[in-house]
Image 1 (cartoon, protein in one colour):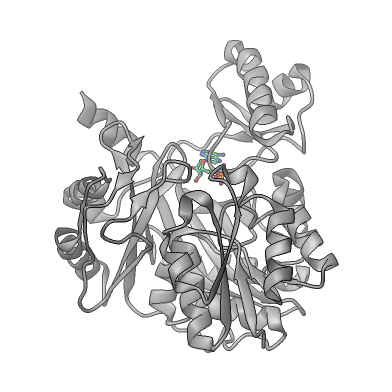
Image 2 (tube, helix red, strand yellow):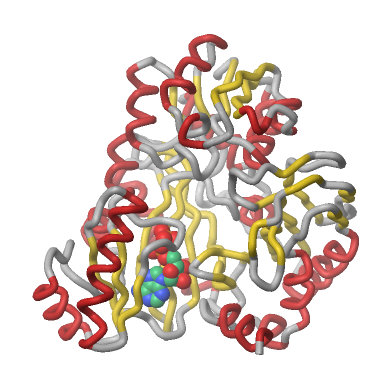
Length: 448
Ligand code: ADP
């Protein structure tokens, strides 16, 4: 087992990884930017190294700085968390060159899945159902027109290198296509330095259902149920729950087995998520994330498994502690992503936390790195905490969440807390009959 792990991240996820390392008796190294001198992950780690100025490009995304921090501290492995360098194949490769273990899948798996066109091709190979669309990249407007007509409007233009819901364009008819095609290309170039575009059928009312998978890197692969992430704003997840209130256990078993099979065949190592859209009882693959997800705690809650511990065990060569047969989900879990943002515009609201009180009691988990007096810096993602509840069934989980939201106090910055209180009161949420557009439509109604 590793003796020392460096965590190449900040905020709640850095703290989350440190917590598991401590329980495993592994020493931890935090890295931080000048804006994070007083951050909780720095306080909680055994050692810490400043890796640069506030700007992420010069700190949390600086591969040379992180490699140096590993060398100075004698770290044997790096946990990348999510975001930043977590899906950067170059980073994993350079770590390998320095004989530092990247806690995650192989460079080639990160590479393949990082390009959504390659990812889809790979999944087709393993019999995973995909969204109908172009056969690979669409290089010019003529091809775009032919493909769009073939699959039928509306269609979605997507960036092969895309992420974070950026650069997707819905096209409703032929006349719109040309303008949006070039817009999508230039946005993709700007955001990802890669203007490769592909086309998918735009599904009208799907749910976002993702399967948590885990591989031992030697051909063993399992799935740990699903997460329903349909409550979204601008294609970004806001609230997640498991099990999904809109998909049956039999359907999950079927798509779960298909997913686990793909993982086994690939000889995938560590944690991954295979994302699907689900409509009219069909699953359609959209992408695979080769890292731990923000919403992983709801899976941990129902399966009673520490996914970070499993990641570390697999990376160290000790292997996973569970098998498909030993997995037994219990109850229902929901996560709310609490952002320092001002409603109703969702504009970022960094600043000083004057008061923070975390909810507690049975079935509550608050993953956050904020504390009284902490100043949320303006330079990074606005996620400041994740409230996770677990209960015997969905109804009880919703009640527990309402109770916990009432207990949670964050003063000093604006937060999205009230949004969740309102969502919980909505009939469509209570009944579980929502799709990926529900929140967006609801927000539009509220604004009128
Ligand atoms: P990203 O990597 O940018 O997050 P994804 O491919 O994971 O992009 O898609 C993010 C979200 O965009 C999905 O959860 C869904 O809400 C929406 N989306 C993606 N593809 C489609 C599609 N073909 N039809 C309708 N909505 C889609």
